[in-house]
Length: 183
Image (cartoon, rainbow, N blue to C red; front, side, top):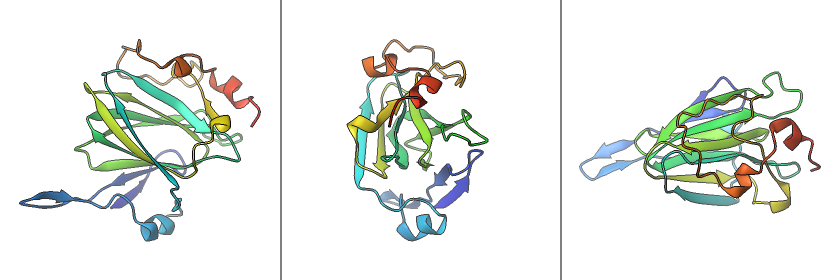
């Protein structure tokens, strides 16, 4: 695998290197030694798998508040997503800046999202499945998020059909208000 820097400090695009033969392919998605060598999280106490059943659905923008901050290792295993990370670290020179990546079952890439970043994605195909490893277990009281359409962040989601947001995501505050919530 190749672990590549992005424009946001700490976020990494990981290109898998599939080995192909007549049976298909095989690729490593995680290696403790390589991750540690790049200063990335190597503990993953929880793994999640989600299926989104309609093109255009957005899931996000989510994170966990301290002391439950979490790194994520995200991979789309079916379909294609537009995956977005936003720097929410107070005092960061990149605070509020975002970067997006197209991840898909055939792109052989995944995204490492460190603590201090909000994460979300939009399904670009009729359905998509995403797996992600979590650097911490889910802590419901620490769950946070901000609205997908916060004008201060300005994420230009590629598909306009947003009628299928979850009630939770519809009710999220803008980023400034979300960060003001007590931990």
